[in-house]
Length: 271
Image 1: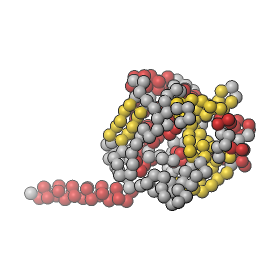
Image 2: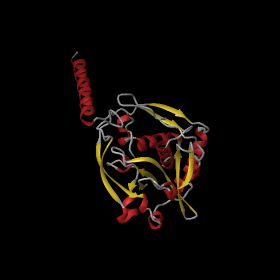
Image 3: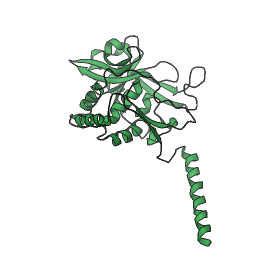
Image 4: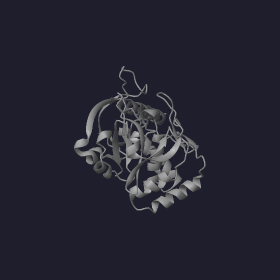
């Protein structure tokens, strides 16, 4: 009887401790989550073969260029991840259609992986802060990629832009009228650096490398970027490889031409 009481007491302590950690740190320490897998025209074996081929490429730039090219022509599809505050989050892989954020999520995760199982694990680390599959932990903003201790890349915008670089402090997720872009998600103040489009001179563009992840700066309150893509250099010209809403698919567009009438550019580089 004493042993039963002791075990029950220990169980109560464990439950209380778990609730305390969840309250204090705001994290779900369970690794269990549901999954949604839509591979489109791909098979799992084809994806694994793709990763094997990418592994033979020399350096992250070549890997990103190779992997991103394989998705050219893929239809644009928005809101494939769904989700909202208070809803159970699921790990979604949907290769039948891509938006600008899921495109770079998949390419970066594939770059780091050697098997389909590893790809899913890397996707969790790429898409979610601290590797916790929760809507609140999703990297909703491009600058989440370079912020905090658990980063996907480093911000080289100022390194490339030099004196042409501008920096502004934004309260991400807070609109001009005080409402939220994403209800249920906390706001965060963050310095955002970008190169204004009118200062994207040939020397500045020369500093952009194939494989750099690009963000189109947004001048709207509460947003850091309005769009993302991947830099690809071909014959000395920099292209933006991206999932385009205008063209309805993943394609390449000359970056200098695309940036006309856009506020500015952010450049992130993998480590």
